Image 1 (tube, rainbow, N blue to C red):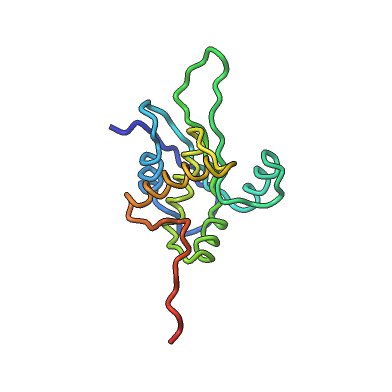
Image 2 (image 1 turned 90 degrees about the vertical axis):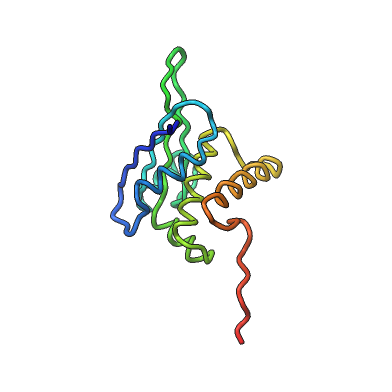
Length: 157
């Protein structure tokens, strides 16, 4: 039984995108809580990402993933983890620049965002180390390499 329901919103025309089943697999793997919940994953273009990043983080540029944990009003219990907003063009560009496969980087962004929804952060080195270790472990379960190690390239011969 899956404890997490994933609602996928495609708000951009970027192609190709991972399938709903991939988003579900990645988000469910990263849901470490033992309670039923729901997350909305919204895939956006650079304009929407830039606007949200500016509004909520004061940064006037698009970013790879934004996490918005759900905060229920007092006395209300609704099983919502929150929302992830992922910018498709940024994720694809980062994957190319970092020499990673697109699926590996998409999985990393979903897992990274899901951990933020559960209270993990990387503001200081200790928190970053804990969060990165979880990401590395979960990504390895999917068959993906450590995203924090730059892949060494063969020298030209």
